[in-house]
Length: 194
Image (cartoon, rainbow, N blue to C red; front, side):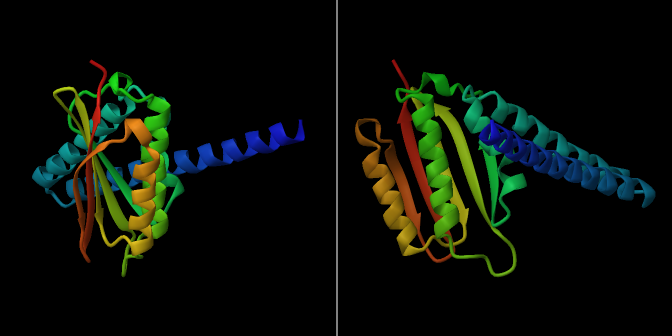
C-alpha cells in the first residue's frame, strides 16, 4: 500500500510538471501574439499564429502514431528533461502497429537511443543541444532519423553500436550515420509487415 501511494504521488508530481510546462508555453504564445497586436503588427502576429498552429498539428500527428507510450514520451520529454531539447516531426500519417517488430520493442529501442544520446552528448556551450527525430512512411518501411545539433561523445557512439547489435533479427537497416564535431545523425529504416 505504501509503495502504491509513493508511485501515485510520483506520477501526480510528474503530471503536474508536464501540465505546468504546457501552460507556461501557451502563456508565452499568447504574450507574443498580444505583443504583436499592441505594436500594430498583425502580419507578424498572423505568421506567428501559423507557426503555433503547425506545432499543434504536429503534436496531433505524434499523438496518432498508434504507439501510445511513444506518443506520451515524445509529447512530454521537454517538460521533464532540460538538458536536451527534443523536436519530433511526423511527416505522414503514421501507424506503428504495421511494423514487423512489436511496438513495445520499437518504443524501447527509440527511447533507449534518445537516452543514450542524452547521456553521451557533449553539453552545449550556452543552451541545451537539440535532437530532431523525423519519422516518415516509405513503401513498406518506417524511416526514422535522429539528428543531434551537437556532438555525441565516442562513448555514445559505442553504446549506439551495442544497441544496434542487441536489436537482433529485427534490427533496423542503417541508411546513414554521420559523426562530426557539429552534428550527429543516424537514419534507419524499420520494415513493416507485408
